[in-house]
Image 1 (spheres, rainbow, N blue to C red):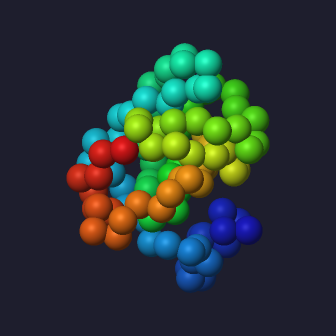
Image 2: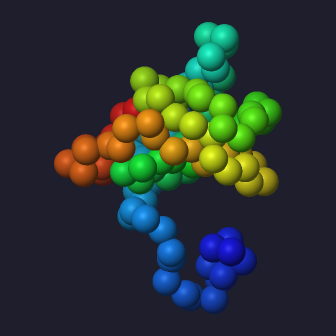
Length: 98
């Protein structure tokens, strides 16, 4: 819904504000230990979105950098994840490093 309405200038219906990290590169680590480079799109207190060509299943536990996450949404070029433990508000800025 948000993607369909974003060009209409309507307010976002999201739990937390998002920031675009200055360093968008991080690593996606699967349960098997296999790592893949990804590009972060944005980060909030509760989750993140990133670009990848890796195929993931909804609900799968992964790590983004050192942060444990669960895959909650797929979009055209990547995925959104929810952090197992929310990020502390004082850490959320463009210099954040997962």
